[in-house]
Image (cartoon, rainbow, N blue to C red; front, side, top):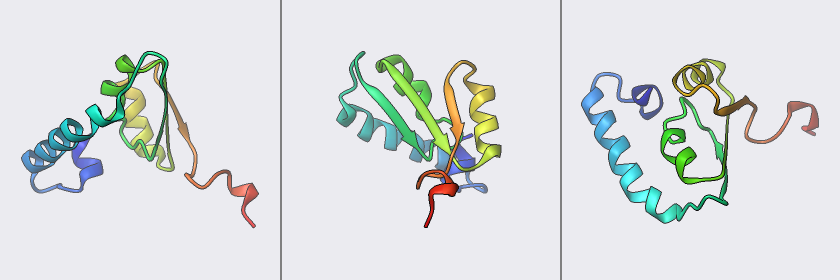
Length: 94
């Protein structure tokens, strides 16, 4: 799941290290509370959901890729993931 979204197909150890470093840097800055509501735009495989869900009151991941969302749903059953473009429903485009 990490390699799929960090684009290090030939170096899985680099993808894992980058994932750990990113989370170590950014998670404290989020200052999540049980009252927090998190919308993860571009959630991909849900790699942030396993950290954000326990620390927040509500998590919803959206992504355009049905394949990445399938991985997220398999990894984290019961977590809300929706296939949706980040710029809103296509019917509303001008």
